[in-house]
Amino acid sequence: MKIIPTMFPFSIFTSIKISDRIESLRDAESKLLEFAKTRFVPHSISSDGSQHSFELFDTPIAPPSVLKHSDDNNDAKTKKKCQVFDDVEQYSLHGVKVTNHQLSSKSDVNNDDDDVSSPAPLVLLHGYANGSLYFYRNLHGLSKFFGQIYALDMLGWGLSSRPSFQFKTSLQHSDDTENNTHQNAKVKSAEQFFVESLESWRSHHNLSKMTLAGHSMGGYLSVAYAEQYPQHVEKLILLSPVGVPQKVEEEDTKRVNSFPFYIRALIHTMRAMFNGGITPGYFLRSLPYSKSRDMVNGYITNRLPAITCGEERQYLGEYLYQNSMLPGSGEDCLCEILTAGAFARVPLIHRIPQLKSSGDGDGDGDGEGLEVHFVYGENDWMDFRGGIDVQRLCHQKKMQDDKTLPSPPKVFVHGVRNAGHLLMLENYEGFNAAMAIAAGREEDLPPGMKSRSVEFVCDEIAAAAAANADADGADKSTTVHSKSGKAVMTERDAAKFFRGGRFSRRESRQDDNADIVEEKKE
Image (tube, rainbow, N blue to C red):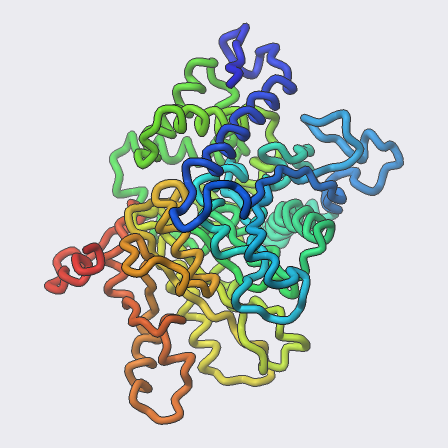
């Protein structure tokens, strides 16, 4: 691995060439890909490499229409202003493709006929400030369940093009009554930056259907894509997604005011920086070289104790570091899409119940709703109750039994043991198992697998199942909680299972039925 020297103490004033940073990022990517091929191969998969192929790609895409000067200037240099690749004519999305030749040969991926044995190609979108190779521990294992896997560097991150994150807009309101409209327009432009680039990429690869899975910010953007292009989304898998719950101002104010004065001052300072557009990447690039390195290495050590191999930590740290040190682009979406505290300006809790499925057609309500799977880590700081609340809203919408409306999504909530927000790295086997279950391939999991994920349902679905369990001719969609027919856990159990720092376990800690959780962990 090439370690880049620094000539000046502050990173923003160094003479390090962008080309050198790109080379270091490619070196780290290559090493992580080698780990994916050799270190994280399930026992059931042949290690001779004949069944699988790994391929890095750079797919040309059309520039998003929301970009400033993307189509209203005849100067080609102004039309395309990538900050890292000056020698190419088009924007591009970088990524890795994994093919299980045995599985993909069973059916044509572009065949519109449903084939439960061969799910639609899996497309993985990374989280904020990450990249496609954050899934290096999962690629080989997931290929047992998906014939084709595409892990992408989203536009503005990784080795994809990095245009300046500046949008053209016709809304420049100053009137407070119109601020919300203006803010929603900014959110829409930020979402379109990613949605249009993903759709251009999909079109280039001629994928009629995708199993679309996104982590954190990638989960949020997956929903934004599914809103506009439901015909191309076979299933939606949201991996600890950001931006689901509605922010309650009174609760937030009460929580902040409960802290000592110096903590409140720190929170207000950090929020002011956030609202001023100072991203984590910008802050990192402003630090002295040694401080920025130490910060990234400390992040890997503290946040990912499951990675015990020093070499693996080294290359993952280099991958994250160089990704962040390249000129900012996609990272600037942060304060456009989220508010301080990681709440969405336009929360997903109200958007997911409105999603259409690829089979809705004209929306006559006769088709099956889109399958949406939430997957959270046991120690996740992202609030699992967002997924439960979405499930509740979709269930209530279904109970309205209005055949003139499209069928609401069918929502599932999964928990992965021994994992936090970075669940794909912290417990890759449990993560892969949850993905297999979401894809309808649970039967392919090893019998008695200890890292199998847990499924939860809201109280309303549990009550409906209990009421209809013995009824003849009951609606099976309310009585079967798991696609395999297994019993699933309730909200009460979920409050015991999830232990993230964003919320307390409340009264469930003192609950006399704590043995439920212990039983799950055996």
